[in-house]
Length: 417
Image 1: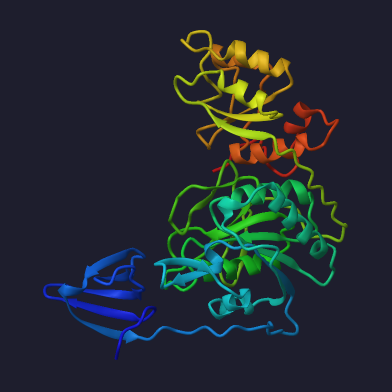
Image 2: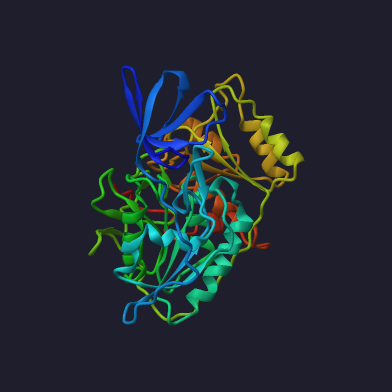
């Protein structure tokens, strides 16, 4: 049987064998194979003794409608792209988005066990690294109509992982006190891989959608095993690993719940679903930045942001909230006072991720707080960036007051592991 791109094969060399998916090769003298590890290997045709076809490529037939199951709670799925909406492209050796979102359901049969997927909405399909505040606004507006629909129990959003915590923070502020669950989930590995985390994540996310937890939350693997997931607050979660299936972790706050395929165990306080009509507020000032301080950094970098018309900056600081001050060769004190007097809002977040800022512990911090910087307690830097854009989007708001106001659990007065 002749092997073709997309087939699962075993390639025999004189002293070794390789099995995986046969890829289209860019050079006539090279055979490309995607191994089970997910990595590609190139083999010289001259060294190959034979290629056995273990399994022919599976052709996916597109569906144009969703199967409905009477008696189960209705959930809406909003598909935005990312690895959870992608599968292997044999010609490229990488993954592409599925051409038809309905193709997803061939891989996710467990999704339908507990819920009725009443609608699939696709505002756009893109990698999360290409998203920005306009996309967050579009998703918020898409959610609004389903939050108002009394026949919908919950909203399930799928997105790429890289900026998922930015989206969850944005929706937490834009949607406010939601009346039903808004659940974001993901996969680190494409849907057609045996080790994909998509199936468990979606099953757990579906259960979160029909739970009593009326919050914007991220649901995903709690460990590298396929045993259970956590439901994290949208403003207190961060991607902390580039490739592990349990990439997301709660920061300074316990998860809302531990979720298996069959149960939801509550772990921390949360809002309960209700009938109050949501008030969507997606105003946003795009001229905000997230700046990481490093040793020896020149304070004149702040002039760049002023010249470019930026309204605010979140500055990631060392330790409890320190950067170079009077004892340093390049002190930031004078420049910080100068740019803030000219109207640039400067907020402080922790580089350490975990823990809380406290500028009063060291003399350095007391020097800095006197410049007017807004220290944001235990707020995550990414959440602070999103919140600053949202707060500045409201002309006339007192920025300091509202940055320190707890809108969506972004500030935790008591740190939790």
